[in-house]
Image 1 (spheres, one colour):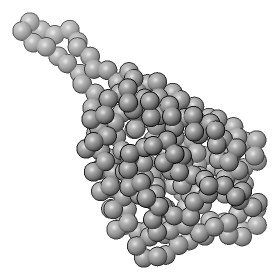
Image 2 (image 1 turned 45 degrees about the vertical axis):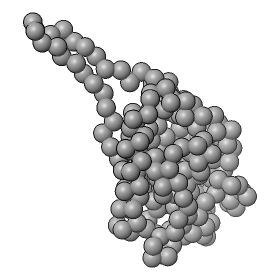
Image 3 (image 1 turned 90 degrees about the vertical axis):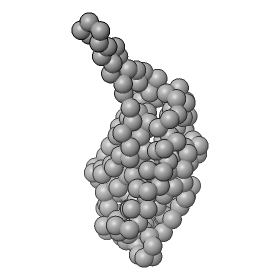
Length: 211
């Protein structure tokens, strides 16, 4: 299957809000599962490249973790709207790199988008709790973001397995570094492009590809 001429098709990794090659310049092909012919090549990143992505996410965390729940909710809602707008393009990419029938790919996109929809609302409800306490004591639960989240996802649901993890982390105030399966990295890179369209701050959502 030929990839559609879509701005969502990307051949570079997404680190700190920029599209980058591997420092080594090495790439690897993404193969069409129907005939094993190359669709496109993407960067073959190694440890040092990933460390740069982690550092970018860690730096972004300092600011992102202090944003309000309302602001995070608003940005996730904007991301959901963009994902919904580009559903057909996303499904075409899934079909091209997984071999999944287009109707099934459209179903996955709807399923994956629903996680962003859900967490855009849950982001508003990241509340603490005061629980019954002994005399002269007060017990308080405070929910806080923990830092950079690493997401390693499988090939068979390249959209939904990212959004269900990333949307939750972002709603909580964490930042992400995503390593998709080497067989299906194009969906992850397309998702990165949609976060760029949504206006995510640099370093909040990063994607590295490697073999």
